[in-house]
Image (cartoon, rainbow, N blue to C red; front, side, top):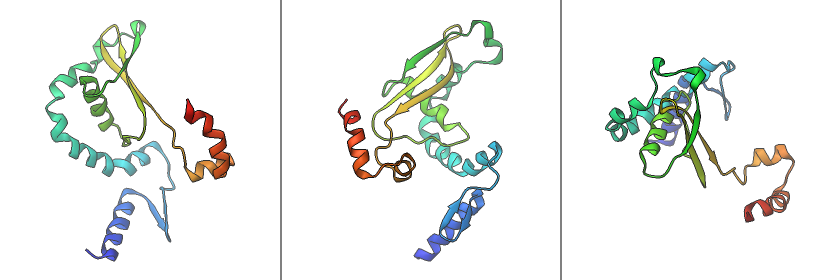
Length: 163
């Protein structure tokens, strides 16, 4: 495939997803409503689901019962409990499964990560999940916003990195 053909395919895909192309800039849609953002990411979400389907489908019978039905939720008795997600565990599979079903795709991230399930103790069902990860050390737009140059970042983050 020629470079120009690949570029045209990429631009067409971006425009179909709702992005605007102005010269060499790729811009999000002017409308930033929740529904527009969902549509913007729909192709990526479907792609990730498709790629993971074969590997995760076998686990669905064990995962679905970990979600509460409406009658199982008793608001006055909710008691959240944090469960750290360990590698190669059923909890890790559940975490991945839930992330795949969000309307905005979730990045796997880089560096150290902690992932948690939030379980309702009164019914032992999943209430939510969250993850913590290392911040990006060197991100030019972030540094510019903070007002740092390369040396400022090195000096100021030196102590953080030694912890």
